Image (cartoon, rainbow, N blue to C red; front, side, top):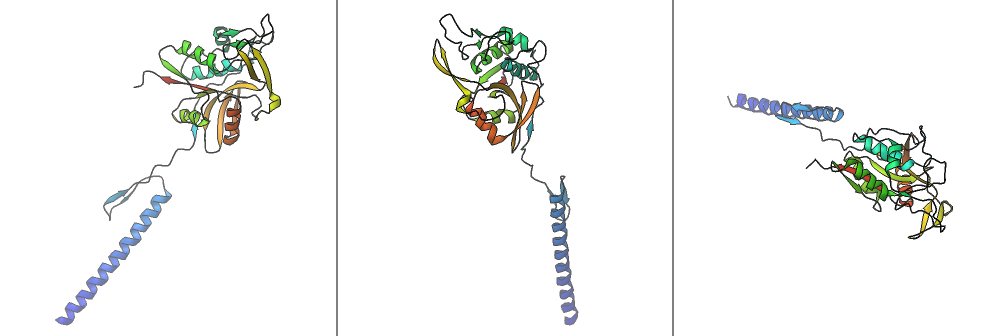
Length: 258
């Protein structure tokens, strides 16, 4: 009788060890399978559900309409309103570049005293290329955008802030109007011009151009260029371009969302 009890104990221990090993192997296989798949694994022996952690989103792309400032009737110097038109169209507004150019605040290219127009106040000169013209900075663009959207949206001018602020908006689903260089290269001192206005001496950026940031991933920034092209620029490079062109940026936020 004692012998049978001893054998029974050994068999029980052996059985428990086998079950333990078997359970361990099954659990290991389950975890391995879960790591290899994108769906949830259910571990019936352990009595709980294995849930995979959510992957961090690193690629943001917004579907923004693409416009070309050279489409008839062309605006060779109308990159800013063309980019604004793309931004407005994203929210369902009429983004006609020529209409926007007609509406924007204007500055004469040069007055009777030889002083140049101030792009901080309005568009300088003629955008059609028939007469001299240059462009306009973020302020008048933001003012025009607010007139178009009225109280439905709030126009935020985040100029003179870091490029991180632009990226934050892309991640929130908001495209951003920006000033860039026309060739997407960092401008040099030769690309700047002393510009005497009524308000004082300014620096005019000869490579001044406008686009809409539509996306970002870990390595690149994506833009709708006002010449009707989609651009993909290395992140660090575009950050330098953005800063060198005055860190000019605006975006829209829906006022109806609490």
